[in-house]
Image (spheres, rainbow, N blue to C red):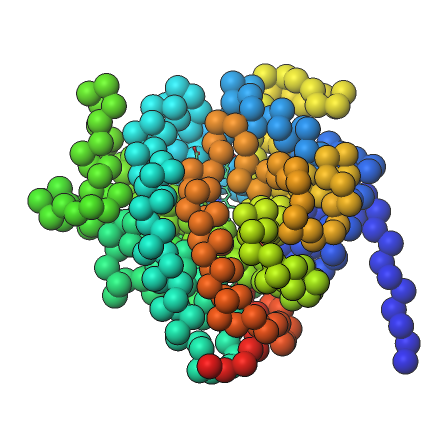
Length: 427
Ligand code: HEM
């Protein structure tokens, strides 16, 4: 048997905009190299994506996230294509969504929508989250095997977010498919129903797929909004937002519509991948799974370690509003920086033994949810979903393990798993 020599990575090979690069090499080998040799790295090698600075150190990401005056979100929160066509402009929705707004507009909108995300709102949904989780697990219990992503991990966030937003059950699958199209646009699996002549796997197919997901979802919520304005109100967030007021101000239709889109997209894939990535981590570290089973009081810190370990959002970006510098590197006004969360969450200067999955890790001030002005609004829900899922899953299937190949999502934005075969004793 001829063994291939391991690839020796060097800085000339690094292109974090290339989705294949995240799959081809151990992503963490790339990040370790950048942290060590070029913590502020100019990534200009990609033909499709415009150049940007990669930030891979914890302190730099903290500094940028906490200064929205200098580091703006309004020009998009992911790395952007060189050619800003209609599809790309739509998906980035510059300035129109909470996540792509700067103060003071951001502060005003966040105060308005915050109502649905208080610790109290999260606690109120706890029994429902437990019920949904057990319904999902009932569905696989007799089989002894499952595709953990599709059958389990994807189902919980989908059900939670759709229930919160009053999306009727018959449309949940549509929401699943549309989220996959928006956030998995660069993955061939979700590039379905392409116009004639368009080739799967091409950049055109990626753009088209994202655009279809975006427009269909906006159309869907546009219809819902019309019905709600017509009088059919409920207890859901969308209904609450219509009536929400701060200092006599209400949300415009556009603000509600884009917020609905953001919630569906932000709440689904992220939590799904944290749940599946966490199960994979437990499967690869059976000692930690046994430790949790023996001491369930470790659950809260286990959830934090899963979030640190998986860091499902790979990056968010900011654009410099003035000439500045980071670590002595000059950055010009208008240039974009990408903050790579999987890297900062393994930063040796912050985390002791960062490559060890340790469910008792304290302190664990990871940045998987970002930090500062745009800190994840849904973090409370995500944490609760992870906790309830692992509590119920391990109580019912303590022997659950990964049994087949892990199929990863082709993306430079979401560290995702598409399929994860698991086995357990059927009940
Ligand atoms: C493990 C799951 C999740 C992860 C890793 C995650 C990650 C993130 C990150 C990194 C940001 C910061 C954006 C920035 O600084 O530019 C963010 C913002 C946001 N997330 Fe999450 N998220 C998760 C779950 C959720 C859920 C369940 C919801 C909704 C229920 C949600 C809704 C949002 C919203 C609305 C924002 C924008 C907040 C703002 O701009 O003020 N996320 N999320």
